[in-house]
Image (cartoon, rainbow over all chains, first blue to last red; front, side, top):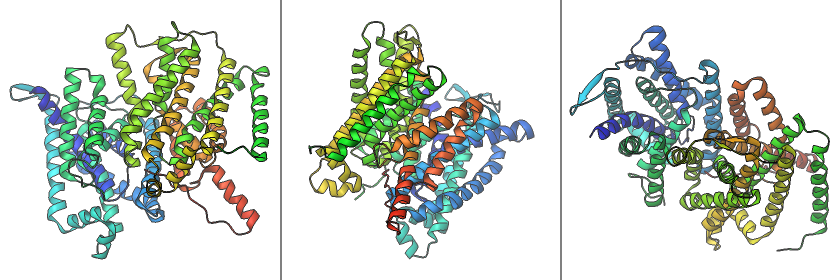
Length: 288
Length: 322
């Protein structure tokens, strides 16, 4: 029971990262391998706001996420849109975006190493016990989970119940047809990419309240986010949330029953099972 | 197999002479330049082995560090009990086997899965090795003491590089090589003319992975002390990709053009500004995407074609699959 609750609490943050990536990959068609670096940058951002300006990390989300939105919009408009324009098909764009975001990944990582060094950082926020089913859990984890749930529900409502959200989903299904029904595909893609970045940054801000982070840990989270997105089905919100739950619980189970050093092995096991039995993901549709 | 023509024989003789000349290097210097030369030959061997698979198929493999580490670890574990030659053979078989597993799981599907899977592979193997060592053996670190010095390693690597080039040349002339070129151009067409595309890709990936395993094994005596974080250093995978792409992967010798300048620059930067290496890698990746998508050799070829023909031939962009 304790394992299950810890896993579920962890999966809230995972779900946010994966939602960010699934928007960037499913709608904007950019396989963003620098997503982990966005997350780590947001960790540092929240850390700085908390320790220098004494701003509550949950409140600083309202600063961190909009900053990430703007930065990601510029990254898309300046660096990635030229790739979208020159690509003749989806495969070419995927490769170009993979290589370009590898470049961004190293660049961001290098800049953060310069700024903060390679040490581990953490700070103490709401580090007090909170009882669920009789066992104590960190209150910061619970708060992070609740915030993640609120953000995820807001995203779901936005995507399914607003006009612009529907337009974004249309671009995810078919960019060409979306253009035919008077949706500005270029703008919707940029918006989705920026929104994805903001979600990832929000996840980073929440993660930093209970997790020890350093400048070079981004790639591990990129891996996890990618696997969640593939497990859930690219571009699918429900799938990403469900897959994040499965991954969070599986990881916590392995960490507490076998060895904390084997969490990636658990992730890979899920990945292999997905590849062998359902490569299109839980909610994904088979490609023609 | 086609019999080699006069041009190829001439190239072969020239290449052999070149290799013989390079092999004399340790006679002149056994300090900094030899050590730099070992680095360069190692990356030439790694990048060429990488290009064997990724060149014709256009799949970006990030599994290099995993195979390399498997090779290094094989030597680390067995050096007390077995002769070095046998260990090289075991390293070759083991990394080939892992390549087969990875290939069977991912190469049937689209390239994105392959990139993602190989991205974390080194880390996965590292975690498993660390776990096995802490739970079932006495310690994490392994010592490798041998009679080999820098120059022996240099010669072994040089010999292996020659073998990799010969293998690449032989594959290019074989049915497998022909099949690979068709797959690289259009996988649907390849499948329609009756090529078992998955089998061909897995085979080539095994060859490439096995070579990388041997390279890791040869390098083990150089490290002397082996532990998981250094043996499975994911940086190697990225360095190999960036060097090969910088050089260009359409020719077997293309990576050579990227490795030599990059290794020298990277060495200089990491000696003077150790914190700036990530930024250098990042800029190199961005340069490959935005400035020289076909690598230096592709750029030179386009330039030569322009000078020769007056009008530039339409640049055939390398189509990478993901």
